[in-house]
Length: 66
Image 1 (cartoon, rainbow, N blue to C red):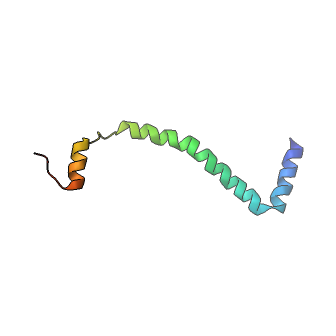
Image 2 (cartoon, helix red, strand yellow):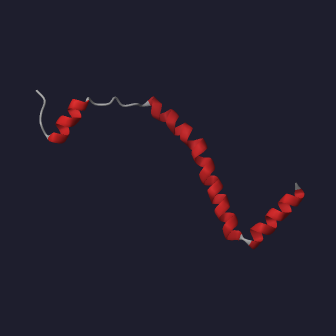
Image 3 (tube, rainbow, N blue to C red):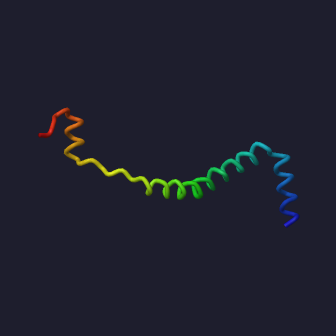
């Protein structure tokens, strides 16, 4: 394990931009896996009912339903 860490330190010193890019990519892959389920749980708490299709068509075309 110590040998791997040593090689990793050498890599970060030699290629700091590549190492930073890998770190940013790792965070970018990890965050959606954690944050998305949390946001989804909030979304289910406040669901809005869908309007009827005829109401949508009437709104788009400008024709009133009587």
